[in-house]
Length: 205
Figure 1 (tube, rainbow, N blue to C red):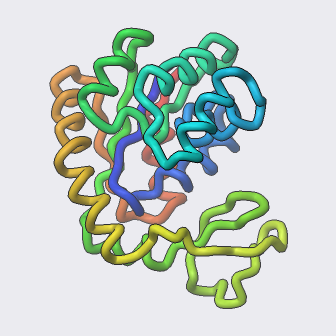
Figure 2: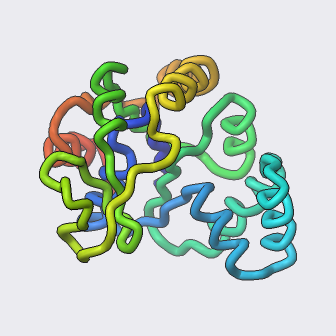
């Protein structure tokens, strides 16, 4: 089963992925993570990606698809979850060329709530756990004791820019997948545990 997660910043995609790990055996296709892993491998492709990143250039779509293809070809797990990809119609077209999307989970959240969440979001540098500032004012991860930090792009201006990009490029994908009959809309304003329950109801093997 190939699943795409869609939702604006703060809708809880990262938290949902963490929670799903306790219930399903799946491969996560996160482009950012895959690119970092490829760079760390010091492969020819990884060196090329590093060169682009070091120059501040965007990694072109062909390279991104190469990395995704590599991940899919080595995965033996029954579920593939695409997090943060596709972001626009061009990427969706490319994804259609290499696999069939069985389910699209759209975490629907009002912009005001999303902004509040993002401005209060903290991430652990060690274990990657995503939490909130409330109750973590000492910036210490309750799971591993690591240091919590706020992403440098979690500012009001950056958030509004990302929302504008999302509305322009990514929102049309919601209607695209709705027309295909594979889109399920989840109320992301609920608690993480409630969202998890709702999502688990639609993931059927």
